[in-house]
Image (cartoon, rainbow, N blue to C red; front, side, top):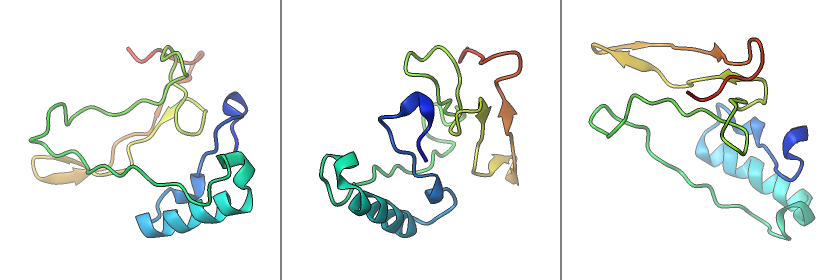
Length: 111
């Protein structure tokens, strides 16, 4: 899916909820079907990071996808909605949190 504000970027929305292996197949299939979009590459390598743990510095922060200037929250689907896809643990109990609509009355700032 190409988002109009980012016509030079490709978003692999089909990877949401997939395993790393499944996502790599999706990425490779797309890249191989239109290599000119990806600088004539045949694969892309994912940068995989571990989930934050309570002992990690600033573990409690949620990532906000913004515009390129970093002044307005756009969300992963460019609709201003922020999702947190993992359980939020409070006193040993997993809870679902979000989503939050940060586009009410116009895109909000990250502050």
